[in-house]
Amino acid sequence: MPLAVEIKVHDTWTPISALSPGAQPGSISHNTPDGKREIYLFECAADDQSSVILKSEAGMDSLLRDRRERLVESVRASVVATLHEGDAPFEITVRTDIGSDPRVLRFKHVTKH
Image 1 (cartoon, rainbow, N blue to C red):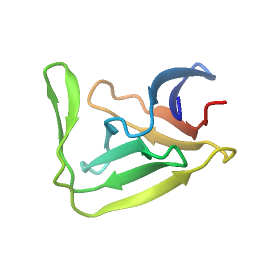
Image 2: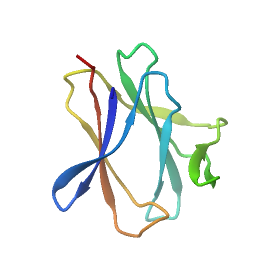
Image 3: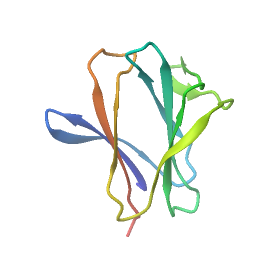
C-alpha cells in the first residue's frame, strides 16, 4: 500500500484508502469558506518511488456510478506535496459536499517490504 490515506476521527487516525503504484488517482473536494471549490488529486507513482498530492483550483469532479471520477482536464494544478518513504505525513483539512464539518486527512508514502 504505497500511498496510505487516513482520516482523523476523534483524535485517532483511521485508514480510508491505499493506492498502489500506477493505480487510478484519487480525489477529494474542498469547499472553501469564500465559496470556491478546490480539488485535491493524489496518486502513487508507477515506479513506487514517490507519491504526489496536487491541488487544482479550476478542476472538476463528479459522482458517477457511485464512485468519484476526476475530470482529466484540469488547469492551474500545482503540486502541494511529494512524498517518499520515511517522509513525514502530509495533512490537509477539507470541507466536502458530504458534511459541513472540516475533516483532516493524512497522506503517507509506504514502500512494501
